[in-house]
Length: 297
Image (tube, rainbow, N blue to C red):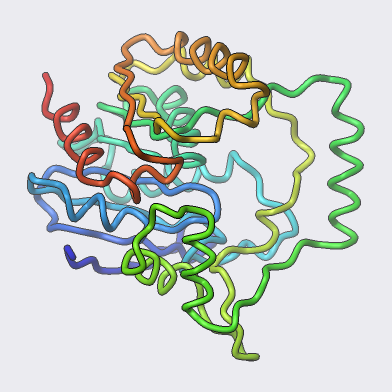
């Protein structure tokens, strides 16, 4: 495996963990993980990169080795502000790497897409791995959504405990049967830690499981996507089931294509024999797609 190193930065009052592969001075590629995931999730893809890269991957607040907020709710705009601060640190706007290469998976893809529209001058090329967004919220859903959030504040979610790392690895393989035992064991060692009672708990703040009171305003998200000036590589997995959040498959396909139509300069690719965690299932093919895209004029 390509060795990685850890760095800890204080970002907006929280101690965030940032994982690095490669050496400073090489072309930089920022990678943003998804919900209930962590930076080490990109290890297999990094191993398959053929070029010399300095890959920088943070653990989002409350995930992996990054500090938890200490609050009962996480707010999506905080991810954008954290990313903005991280880029100010690693790629200052007045430096030669101002227009960065940005890759995000799932929730990280949604963050990357929003950021590329809000700060279009900061993103030179964007790779979105299954960052479709959420179903559009309807006004009539708002009272029930807020009521559910209030109920969850009374009885906050908790993380399940596992007796061993082997059980954690088995849980990962249950979610994704394509994972080899070796890859599942590696991910489990980064995905969980042992608590004082001897149980292994996922390195994610249970507060991330809260419903949250804010509706998903798809028109505003699309306005951000329309503002993206960078070329976009849009990558889906052939056997993903993430479309299920948008209704029946044909309806979901039409909505995904409609959203993609808001991107001015987009190249769409499909990864065969892969599910939503496509960077685990087909890291070699995905790495090749990404490097070809980044090398194009």
